[in-house]
Amino acid sequence: MTITEKILARGAGLAEVKSGQLIEVQIDMALGNDITAPLAIDIVRSAGIKSVFDREKVALVPDHFVPNKDIKAATQVKILRDFAKEFGIVNYFELGEMGVEHALLPEKGLVLPGDIVIGADSHTCTYGALGAFATGVGSTDLAAAMITGKVWLKVPESMKFIFYGNRSPFVCGKDLILYTIGQIGVDGALYRAMEFTGEAIDNLPMADRFTMANMAIEAGGKNGIIAPDKATEAYVRGRSQRKHRFYASDKDATYVETIEYDVSKIEPQVAFPHLPSNTRGISVVGDVSIDQAVIGSCTNGRLEDLEIAAHVLRGRKVAPHVRLIVIPATPWIYRQAMHQGLFDIFLEAGGIISPPTCGPCLGGHMGILAKGERAIATTNRNFVGRMGHPESEVYLANPAVTAASAVLGRIGGPEELGIIPKD
Amino acid sequence: MKLTGKVWKFGDNIDTDVIIPARHLTTFDPKELARHCMEDADPSFAQKVKTGDIIVAGRNFGCGSSREHAPIALKGCGLSCVVARSFARIFFRNAFNMGLLIFECPEVVDAAEEGDTLEIDVASGKISIAGKGLSFAAQPIPPFMQELLRDGGLIPHIMKKVKTA
Ligand code: SF4
Image (cartoon, rainbow over all chains, first blue to last red; front, top):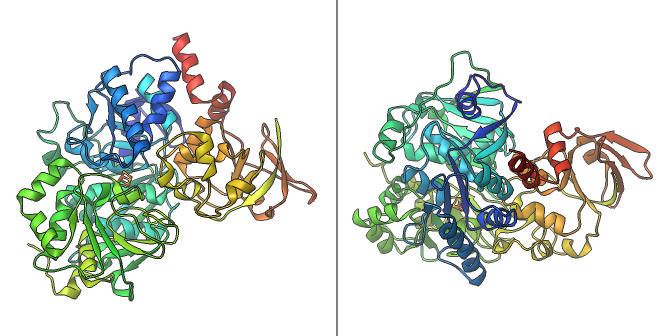
């Protein structure tokens, strides 16, 4: 069996599962946010249910339109707050503790290797980086899971990606996943598990692994997954009292497809509007001027992402017409970045620092684009109107390229500024 | 059950930000969501569409976010069904959970034009294009999904089980 199949078999209480099989699994965590949970809560209440299956296994994170951007957003968040209070939900995160959900849950040790996690948010697949099975569902599924602690799933076929060779300077997890999506397309892994393997993954820091698993959905995948190892062990240590379970794929596991990439041939990638699969290497981007640069989100709002952006921005100024917005994904990251002096670097460069929020990533608030404007962002989607006006444009890139572009005023890599990678 | 409706055609990868842009997600009221359905692709869509109409689209319909507001907005406009070459997986789940009928049928996507009238036999998955003498067999709905539809969606389905447990 593959790692995905093994985790699902455990959740279903079966010795073995096969792709295509319809199973019911016990979940370890169910997640909702300020967009999707109100609907789920409405369903739970209308069904006359008075308690959730397990008060510790439901996480409610109001992160999308928070700090409440308007009266409607405030009303949505209040639905979460009231429900959490009434139903005794342990993992409700109020402003001040709240961060972008997919950065927050692993940081708090609420999702662990071997877990089965469903979330009413498509980027729930992020936790696959820990060697968990995690997938996005809708609000009705979330409601059902909050009531029963179970979810129906079809065991996905697995696709194996083998990344070998050494990464070039400034190439990170974001580039590997953008490159992959560029190769297979936005439905290249439709309904499937994407298993990332190979020496280049073994050498990849956890932050980058989260970025890769995060964007599995951008290729249509049901989940992205990386077998846990020493780096995973080091990451989860001390974060939870709960026991974690390491799984690995068998040598004779079945894959519908196996694809190999030589990462030494991959340069930093930029996804052009309006699909994440519209990727080009940084060397062939051409002259694309930008109005805004956004560093943040569940894809690249972690401390390591801010560190690399600060490395590029240190002692430099953003181009006069460019607005740079930096969004640390969680309060811990925010404070850590502040202590490390990263905020000084961003502020001296002419950027601003937003409180933790999804903000402009989905065109919610904190940096919306006008008609005809262009942004480069470390986020994960560049669909039509994603960051604002339907005639605005979003280009996706890694934090180093995004920071360098803010300085250049057009899309370009750190090497154009003569920057060498740190350590 | 038989459905008859006029076709609205869309291309590949119609994402949930097109179906219902995130700026309108501060509510889950079907009427309000319906007003903004598809507005970034066609600003007047919500006014033009009539009850019973059918969307015919290309590959990967509903890709992107997990927002159930997307099937709610489509249902809210009165659309009876979406026929596509393929669906993104979360949208596929949500549609069944919400009781929005969907069919995968590449042949219909190739043959149907905007303004055509489709006749759909829900049980068998047979889809005909009126006046063109063409009919096709869509992917049948998996048995478990049929059970969901029979029970009236996921919640009634699990409530039935909760009660009998
Ligand atoms: S940061 Fe963006 S992609 Fe991530 S959860 Fe928030 S809105 Fe979704």
